[in-house]
Image (cartoon, rainbow, N blue to C red; front, side, top):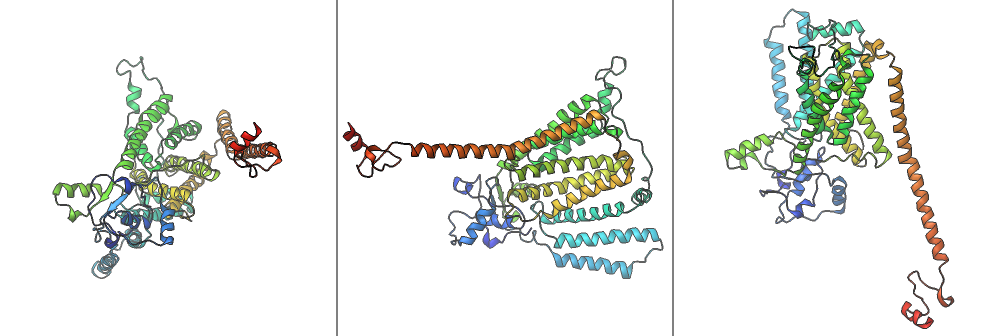
Length: 504
């Protein structure tokens, strides 16, 4: 995303919260229009502005939302916001010239193959960081989010390559990344003795709790804190949290890692780790939605303390949009929210199934890198999905990062199905199947009632009410055979007071 033109930005330093008159102005902070719109609305009240055409006004009204914060920017960070395409191209050319003319090529074929693949990926990343389309986020820099978009493309190509290999070759290919991989590893069983207090163990009766307090506990808390910042809705986060625990109950016959004690499911996970993470995330969302977004150039700040604070706030959002999913507003949004929840749960399951079929230990750095990847691309993807749902006339197609995340999630699941179909096809217990069928039927019945039967009933009642009003108006008596209006006045005999006087 490009930096706003300083000529179109407000050059006055605005302090404190926006005034009441400025609060009525809302900008669109998505895609390439976010920063440029903010420069329009950041102008000081005393600065004379040119009258806008009807086309410009209608276009701005289409992009405004009541859930967006107002942004004031003096537009002085022009050098920092440039793409520097020529500079990157010059440096890349110099590196390639050095490798070709001044460096001796090793005689190791395996090493040269790996280095060639890495160099190809780096060249693609350089191209994408400078030339790719900007996304909805601009902080800390638009190039940062373009970088993760290119990483998502590389990761999807890697998954496609693994998908087209045989099971044996795909698992042995992981050894080229880490020689320790390619070996089957046992899964840890979190079930077993589920006593919270074990009186039989005189040394440490609470050993079951301490055994569960591993490094995954703070990881769960941090993960749900970030997921809350991504989803920005308390109800949806709680639904996904509870639904995943039901999935673990349902699939523990496939993966031993899903076998946990009841208090580990509902107390440690849902209440403590997930619940506290969601609570902290909602508090952060409240702060982000209320803080004033007033950006000033670093060199325009006189004090060193202000400069340091400005550098720190560079890693906070440029502006903020409060998500209002409103799933029950119409059928389209309801189906979209169900699809988002389904893809979220599928991505969560892929984390466990991928390391199971590719023989990666849970603590391996590739598993951690995958989580870091989804943290950076998930927020952009969710914002693009929300924009696509909230204003389909303005955002005519799904965002590029959302498209890539959906493709990655589906490809990961296809790899799991191909590499270990026996585990995936293990028969689900009968009572578990009954519970899921009942839940799906309840969702289907509620959908039919809410968006079809209820609407038909309301339209029928409204039509019946209107018919009764028309019938009552036609049966209303008219005085002296003259034509009377609905207000009781006669067009021939004057006002209603005169008419009542004559009748008396």
